[in-house]
Image (cartoon, rainbow, N blue to C red; front, side, top):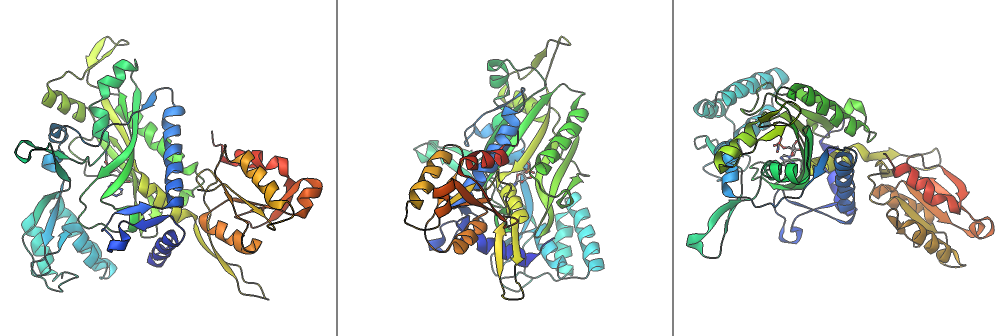
Length: 476
Ligand code: GAP
């Protein structure tokens, strides 16, 4: 679809209209960390709420939890993150800059012709799969790949670098325990599996959902909020009887794609990417990819994780994590299907899909607008209420409409500037409906409603506004 220019335009628009800011911007920012502004926070919350509702309210057998970010350090040993959650890295000795090897080579491949680039990337994939670090270094040297900062090819050896952030818990340095900032929310679900199953009297198959922050010391963090060091995940672990995981994997693959498409996003912008090389704990895995401005990239993962995590926690904790299945009279460790979507990536997806630069020029005059065509359910503001004038009792009627609607959805009141300018500002933040209160409203109790996408206007009864908006934001 779009390209890098579009990405730069989206980033600039997000900053200008209060969606997303670089973290600590007044101190020149913190790399790959972002803050959500007044509209971005609403958009993100709406996506999170929609996901939470679709999981926990629309399914009898899925409940939500909110586990702590800090967990016992052994959790990360059991999960494999201490030993395996690392990427091969290389440092440039002159600039002291560290690169993820695959990103460095991919960046160089982008400067080559298609055939040469494909051959290079194929070579890289084979070396990565074989964990041949000497071979990767040779590949970088043979291709004379240079550091973007120093401009030299003076490289260290390739080494593994763990992506978890750690800190100390405890007041006395010597006694302090090393703890990690969780790199995924899933482990908070696994360690609470029996707590939830027993207290909720849950019967298999059932799911536990959670949203929350995760942290990864990504070395090359690129693509705006696509790859961040602090981000949010929305994960659901679905516990099933061993042997039924294949059918549940297919079920969740389809259910998650349907969730995406139900947002009104074009099916052409999605595709599945099945994993060929599976992680050691998985017996099937795929990504849902979206056509971001930088091309098709992962937004969500669906993984059939077998009984790896629960089994490992049982072994490391010494606590039994089995379930008694009364239907077949058997104790077993359940198998798990995981659905894992990055909330920030979902925000970026919705922004990429919604962002439109439209040429509205006519024979008489040149005109254009930037509009965010969000689905009404996700739009930060659903309705703008605009009195035509600041007098003649029009603001009072507008305020009454605001008071009627605001308990149900987020509204915005504005009386400054011409109506045309006010419409454009609402287009830029993606408000689907604007209502203008004018002198006719006083006479016949009707208002002008203006639709963001078509820019058409019509008169409707003042009393119908709230229900009309409500209808567009009820998806279930
Ligand atoms: N529990 C499984 C898990 O964490 P993952 O593929 O590493 O799997 C799941 O991550 C999702 O989290 C990804 O599909 C992506 O949407 C999001 N994600 C991962 N790393 C991210 C990062 N650095 N910045 C933003 N989102 C990220």
